[in-house]
Amino acid sequence: MNRIDQRFTALRAAGQKGFIAYIGAGDPNLAATEQLALAFDKAGVDVLELGVPFSDPLADGLVNQLAAQRGLASGTTPPKVLECVAAIRRQSQIPIVLYIYFNLIHQRGLEAFIRDTAAAGVDGLLVLDLPPEEAAEYERLMKAHGLCAVWLIAPTTPEARVRTIVQRGSGFIYYVSREGVTGMQQTVSGGIGDMLALIRRHSALPVAVGFGVSNAQQARAVAAQSEAVVVGSAIVNQIAEHGSDAHMPQRVAGFVKTLVDAVKNGG
Image (spheres, helix red, strand yellow):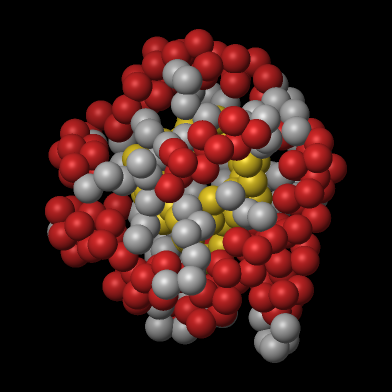
């Protein structure tokens, strides 16, 4: 069984909610990414999303765009990200999803990229700009290599398209809780419960809610309605603030632990 499926099965059995952390791979460098992954595992993170740096990250707000720039500046490439994942795997079995744009996959070749990704120890892909209607070969190869194909659903997604997307997904469904790009917000978006009820009418997959969750109070509120909470920009912002500090991974993991505790204790 895929590590993502294993983790959500275990969470369900324990009556717990999941916490998913997003960081930009190679921000500020890949050695730090490896250290952060291991520290997050110890802090109780259930799934790690690694953003593969790309020059035109259209789904991302300023904080994550800057992380992508720092990743590119540190020389991070998709093959090096996979080397980093392989290094993490030597010490940790934390489930890992790559958050990626299709151009980077296409450049390597779809089959070769998915094969290399599985061999490195990645558990799933979230391809931001690949429409499900054009993903038949992608889905076939993902299934053949035992990888989860994670799809996004937005507040504006009509029910017929929700049905199409969730039937093709695996691992978990990522619900984008607000329109627009990633970024920290002062309040949690309204209407989450109604949209999650709609998704659940068509799928038994766990639903993770992200985009805009920025602090422990918000994470606790979202966990009360969903199977998992995704926090990205708030963590990436901590990395930016402490990037030159030798103790950066531990400092950021300390912040992440407050979010994990809020989700586990308040879900």
